[in-house]
Length: 279
Ligand SMILES: [Zn+2]
Ligand SMILES: [Zn+2]
Image 1 (cartoon, rainbow, N blue to C red):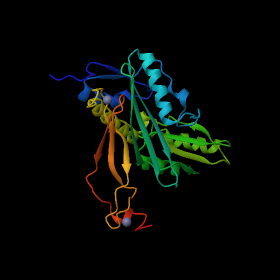
Image 2 (cartoon, rainbow, N blue to C red):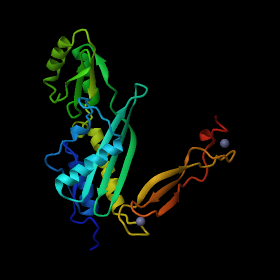
Image 3 (cartoon, protein in one colour):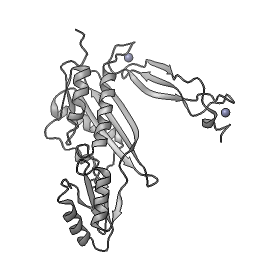
Image 4 (cartoon, helix red, strand yellow):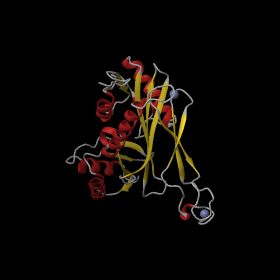
């Protein structure tokens, strides 16, 4: 039987919100490795979605710091951490960036899988009645999808564990009364255990990471060979100028400088993507 470099390994996923369950299947199926959450970890110290603690680190750095802390607490050389960010630039769509970072301290490698997706959840909304809140709750799929209420003079967090459908109208009514005169906002809770669409994204990234770890560098045989970058500049089919369309994927090793350029199947780009033909 073929064994992977991570067969029987214990990987510490630095999480307080059950993310280890999102990676267990991928790491077990593909690598025969275990994923656990280290006890006694406080990831809220690095910032929260609900904003009680401001995030000051970049997502990648925050994931790095968390993964290292998980490694230390669990006493294993292998660590995972993920970091999500949600931005609604134009008000209607929310862009979800998620990075999943893996550290193997014994080999000295650090790998990142990331995704930018449109969140299926609506942005935060100002509410003035209980019905507004119930309509929003139905649209996001509460109670599986969690909710938060924010309001008052400084927009502080009022409620973040709105778990039951039965208690929601009462909590909203009371909060509306207390925040009289100030706007009250309802928003999705993006913590992984309260946000099924984010949990799905983390699961997908866990599969990508496990498959990457099952791929060895053709040069130095270190595990984790995979996509590092893309190369833009596919040429326009009309005028031949380079466009911003991706021409090739750059795969590389986490340890040695070996890279491979893998061309995308399309040899030319449609003129609609060309700055010259379609400015
Ligand atoms: Zn062109
Ligand atoms: Zn290598």
